[in-house]
Image (cartoon, rainbow, N blue to C red):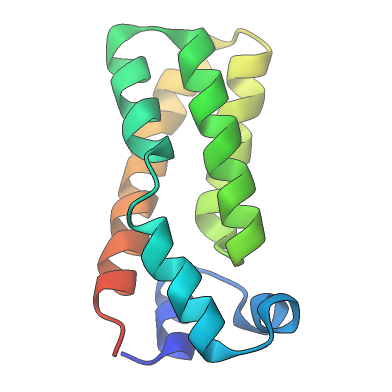
Length: 115
């Protein structure tokens, strides 16, 4: 899968990120680094433990990383769960988390298929 196809698969903005990072090689490098980012696993663990303060920090970090890399769909969902957690609306956060998790899996799968 090429870089544009990858971004289409996970709902990202290829054009925006290429303007920021300039080359496809650099974009790919940072996407591969994203595979090692622990924000999602920290969010997942915190949600399981009902540690909503830690979940907020992890979701906020994930949101920022996604924004920097043009991973828009996951970024939007991360933003929604961040705001729910900021407002202490844990019921909404719990409803959103499966969507975040599914989108994260799609994103990781697409990155793993990069040529």
